[in-house]
Length: 501
Image (cartoon, rainbow, N blue to C red; front, side, top):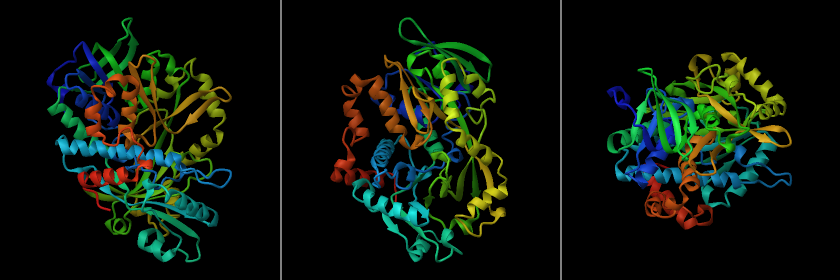
């Protein structure tokens, strides 16, 4: 993907400009090109390769988020019942992603699904009587839903030794533990998937890809279009580019770009950057004893994104184990960003939100300080809650990606820290931006369809509808209410994606 190195320069105007070369922009570009191959589309990516920031393999956990194992999606309510509505919503969103990827394989746009997606059981693991009771209730409730059909539960140590031998080694037999297991889980290399889509766009479409090109500013024009200042980082050349529609999928840099657009909908938004680190082991003796992604409960005052988990990862055909994440802090909004990103993001429109969010999240600040100060030996001690005899020499530290958590205006507290993903669109539907983090990449197709529903509703439900149904056969239907359709869709994607469960 070296289109910019040929000396080509962007045209003065496009129908659509997409900022960022991660999974969001690449997905949206692919969708739009399928709907209308005549659209003039440009992608600007500031680095020299697609998917080098949040989408890169080691910059995220690679979990195909289906809500099979993430306990923060299934809270226990004050009356003791388990609310699985968010889990069902996320599970449906991942099914949409799998349908889209299956379509790309069917059309021959991408090949070899094993390069980017592999079967990997998803498990929830808890310790102690209270959490074991919660997990049992959660299993009972989730088992009623077609989306979680086949979920197994056990509190039996012998069964747990079958499921997670590495975790159960040298474990005290009297310790109360419980787990659920979904064999339908997946490990996904979103970086490889994004580059496969990017290669298709570059080689087999009229979408123009410009690497090492950074959009520095977005300004509204009187005719309703947008004017962007684009910098060629190789040749230090600057030019202005216009577009009828702009999507900002620039990870942490989405926030300042959205702010530069001056749309009313961006007012009050702030960002709180959180980085992370993994402990990673390539010791194949350990790897062969752990074939799952195992999530547990977050510690007190820890953000949902810091839920400890021990995962199998499959990257470029090589298996490894990952444990974490350990939170970190940097004022950068991107891994390859500037330390001035956070201070320069503060302005009169969001300072109340930022201060309010900080004031009401002091425990989180303390948690981050403690995490940043941890030594490798202290991190290994946390790992030993999962692997009793973990040896420091078997594990190395790997820095994960930067995440900018959303801070929104809140009438009561000034500002509120959000840990989800949010799409911000202006009233005319001519500019959209993706903010936030988890579940992120897993639900990219759903998020980009959300953008299209809000920005191109007449086309999506008119001339694009037939193609949409070809790509996403379940579109517009609730899988949770349709067991027959759910089975059909899952069998179709299982075959196309070559999954085994």
